[in-house]
Length: 223
Image (cartoon, rainbow, N blue to C red; front, side, top):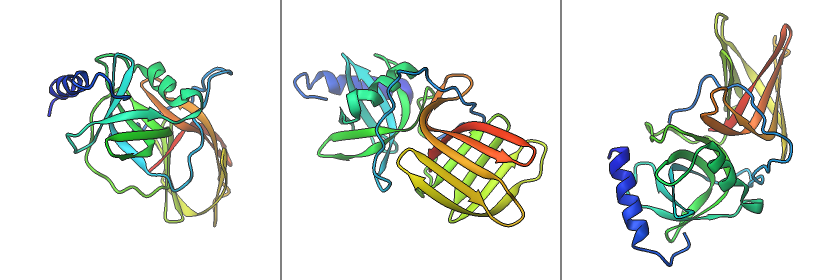
């Protein structure tokens, strides 16, 4: 279904319920941390599900359409002080302007109760299905990192890939990942909203990689 048809369909359905409260991942984001004072969506439990789909706004009410599903859901913003909705509006969510979003939360009985952002982007399209592992992806200027089943793979433009076993130490707002073997790289993830360089995507975490010859900065999100 095209973006215009989907938008018209969802808005038409929304208008019929006036009383109801209502992938493509960037390979080149760069850290742009919001100014001090911006709210950060609350940290959801580690095992919370991620809802992926299109988010729309009509008459200041959000509605959500899951990927590969023509249904729609009313949205309750359960993040502290409505921080998730505010962040999505900062990215460009407005009447007639949908976003592709990945938010922590689960739909039930036609309602999506979202607790925080995983990632969101202005390109409002769903992409081919992928396996959700709950592990990490990160990327920045000319680099990308994948962590999966205890192994880290770092790809950098103009360099050989670095692959090594990894271990993780986590608190609600801070994650440290160390690579083992010949590499001394250390990866630090901090829970703070992070924009890509073109301000077209937003992620839940900042990422920093300490390498023997320097540091890499970027954004991180959960797979």
